[in-house]
Image (cartoon, rainbow, N blue to C red):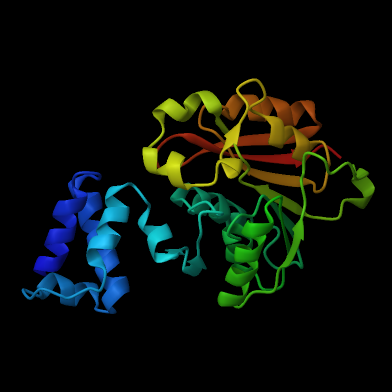
Length: 277
């Protein structure tokens, strides 16, 4: 392995586990030099990287490498990221795959709205998989929407974006005139009291507006979305502590066939609900 990669991994081992530090080191050098991972693993020569110490200082302070590089790869997408957008997680990819698995909708011109789109990752992933679908993406953050629009262009997808605060969006749709077939959302769901258990780099660098809900109203966004009856089917990413609470809320709001699904780590992280109407 290149001594440069080893040096970076050793430096980052103060912040990350050895495996994480090595993975970040390889990714960083790949991105900054254009060299392949195979070349880096087989090389025994140091590599000169401009401003490497500045990059390491930022990473050692806990800044996620995705923000340092300004991009990430997720579900085959090339996504630009800034501190106005959350870093897409594997469990969000599982939520997307759950929608993709629904064979009853695949060949239809399905109408989807992604509420709290952030980087646009969910909307773009669905549009890439089903080009015939009509995808809308909403967010309260103008800065996030700017990034999402850029990501849609980067990945060759046509998506309708809109600035919407779902908590003040007052229009409730009669069941007979629902404008969408699917609502999907990964809304803020981390309770303020959970901050003590979170990684410092998430707290310091990722947008709090996209993460946190009040301790006394952790279902704020789920309730706001459910009550609009925008679609007969809703898919949510959820707080692993709130699976049953979200399911109960959906039943109270008139949804049936509520299913809780665990992620690859065995945590309850997704809910699907169908409208009784």
